[in-house]
Amino acid sequence: MTRCEHPDIVESVGEASLRRLHKSFWIGAALVALHGAVLAGGSSVSPVVSDVIQFALGGVLVANSVRIVRASAGWYRHFWQLHAASFLLWCVAQGLGVYQDVAPSTNFMLWLSNLLFCFWFVPLAMALFFDSGDEREGFDWLLALDFCQGVLACVASYLYFFYLPRAESTTDLAHSVWAPYFAGYGMIVLAFLARSYLSTSPVMRALFRRLGALLALSGGVDALYYYGGLGVTPGHWFDLFWSLLLFANLLLPVSGKRVADSSEERPQPSVPIRGFITVQLFPMLLAVCTLAMSLRIARQDLGIAGLVVLACFVCFSARLLITHYRLLAAQHALQREATHDGLTGLWQHNAILHILERELLRAQRSGTAVSVIMADLDHFKLVNDSLGHAAGDEVLRRVAGELAGAVRPYDSVGRYGGEEFLIVAPECNVEDAQVLAERIRTCIAQNQISMNGRPVAVTISLGTATRASGDAEELLVAADKALYRAKINGRDRVESESERAAMPARAGRS
Image (cartoon, rainbow, N blue to C red; front, side, top):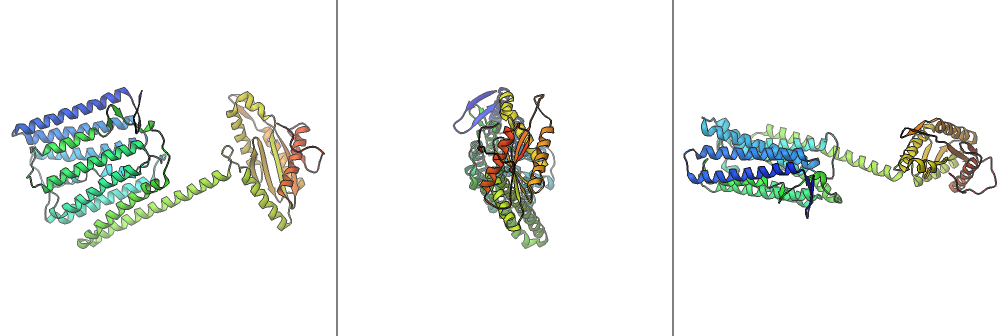
């Protein structure tokens, strides 16, 4: 692999892939030069040759996009899949044009060819909904709904630009809809430029900026075709403009000798407001455009317009529900992250102390007892020293799972610090606390843990204390003293507060 630096992006491609992309570039340049020579010659067969050369250019573009798809990953791969799909539609339209040059054509073929030429870029417009910071595994319902909205926009566009004004022209874009067509084209260009500004990814910014510029040039050439009054027919010198536009798409992924690969892209800090606009604004604009076209459709066919509006409402409502669900899920995940230990999944230090204070207040009101069990793994430092900290973390995770499974459903287990755990047991008297602690000790001692094929003997010492009311700190100190006695008396045992001994609470232990 060759690696090289760029002021905006980090790029990495295989040498073979780079040579193939350069080969596509030079093939495209040769086809454009050949096209110019054919048009300059004014041959009687130049209309057919002109269309064939443009069809070949489209094929080179599709093949080039497919190569990039195979060498890329993530959103960048999806972008070039859409790019390939768009120019495949363009090739179908151009292929119909070639067929019409050599064989009798029907109104249907002319209509289909012009329809594809007007809307070939629709798959590529779906790239507006990509977010480089949101790589979801598997099927994404939001993208599916955005695709459905895109299909509805295509249906509304067909009805608006072709079906309703069919009395004016059965094969080409009617004069009455030229202005709204180019206005919509301009909105797509502005959307790509805005998407470039809102992107946090350098690769995405560069790509959408170039694509917006190319679409602007394409719209300008189409406007010149319709408004120029040139009487353009196949084989006219004007065809060279379209060939140059096709060739310009070969420059889209290329910067000098470099081709962007999103799998090597440096992560950029997320910007929440930009991410929100990216995810919400563009689908909303698409729905608004569909509804705006439906207003004119309703003047001639209220039933069809009603179906389009209903489908648009269903898609947008479903999208809103999914977005709200994901927001709630994200809030829940953040709340859990703030209250649970990242390694063991148990309550973290502050959270378990808050639970203890809450249970003491409840016990004071109800007249019941609250027990705490302080637990500490025996000789845990030896595990870290002999097997490494990764193995130590795995032992902590497994012990945490055993603790959570051994307590009652309404007990709470937290990681108090390091290899020390705290269990809060409401409505639990002294005897019940000892029984619970002994069950935990037995469960840990009997659990067979193996690391890298080596058995690891894990035992735990526990100290219990019980109160019906009082201060949480006092209860913790009492449980800590009991735990210390368990360590002094041989480890792998349970001691309770009732077996008090006059000794300090926090001597060194392991």
